[in-house]
Length: 296
Figure (cartoon, helix red, strand yellow):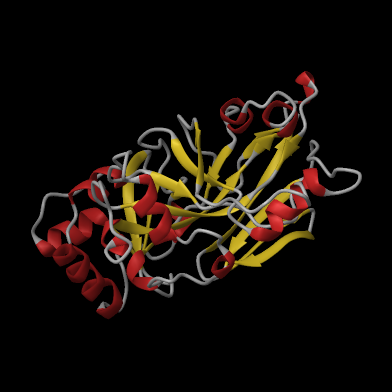
């Protein structure tokens, strides 16, 4: 099943879709059928849900002939989490080919590398994203799988890592390279306003049991730039959650970006940085495909 946030008659609503994404239900309608208090905020649902309510919702959306929304034309879909819980945690250098393209002489990391990406709001599918041309910035793209946490996580074991996950989404870790690399300012270079993008949909973890192996690609103006599979992580999701939560407590709704494969603009010779008018398309197999339009 898939979850998103939408505006219906200018009111925020949670919409749940079946596996095929051809039936759509408001959380209001599901709450009425299942006799629980409705949720209007997806972060609240992620925080308070349990396996029992997930199973009951799945039974309804997969068995009912139609949802209470005939189609999505009456809804304005937003990024699944429009306002992230707090900074997004990112895994750096998590694909071998990406490490090699950035520095052929660099050894693979022996332990996971993390950085934080400030994201007060999320850019969503179809949104315009600035290249900060007036500041002469070098904007780049990074398609990534997002892990959305489903419960408070401390000292997570690899064996139980999946228990702490709510689901998965598609993201783009837009980056300003001459800030990130030229100045050595990863936090600043990754945190320009609008530079955290995520899709409309979060797929519940039951759809993609670990180990997760999904094709991941990014295109700029229909030119394929990145193409890989999440099976090529250097540090898989259980390893990252086990490592990170030894010292950092994660909370329901926290998001972990899992790294990007080779093909980023900075690695080309000459570099292929983004410019106004470019259309960047991110896609992950069976999850979502979405585009952003670059502007000055």
